[in-house]
Length: 164
Image (cartoon, rainbow, N blue to C red):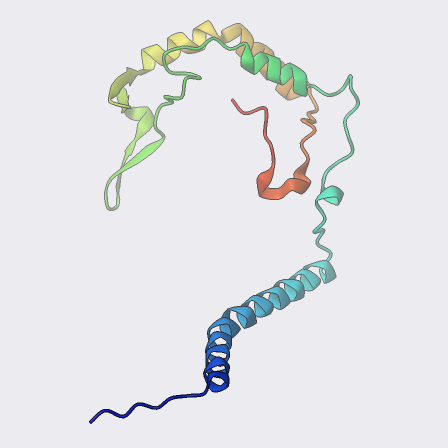
């Protein structure tokens, strides 16, 4: 014997709305709790004297003659492409070989990157080729002030046009 209960449409509609509210309510509550927690944390940081405004953290713009950012960009783009540097095959710093054990990269005679072997003599040749440019870069870096005019207010959507 089969019992079939027919619910009126209004009751069924109310049940579906109640079910939807039960499913949507917890995420909405958590979102509100998160916003309240972040606002409270920001107030605590500001009470301790922390600066949360990006524009207040950025220094004043550097005058045109003092800004060495364009010199830096020109010198880095003038570097000759070699076998290793700055082509993207730098020597490894350290590589884990087993738990608690690591291979120290600078002590190895050669390293493998993209199934190609590289060695220190190739790196030395690349550095020798770029020696004049590297010397100029050292001077610019030690005696310069840099303002790349990046708008930090964009957060994670920031545009970095000067990447190497």
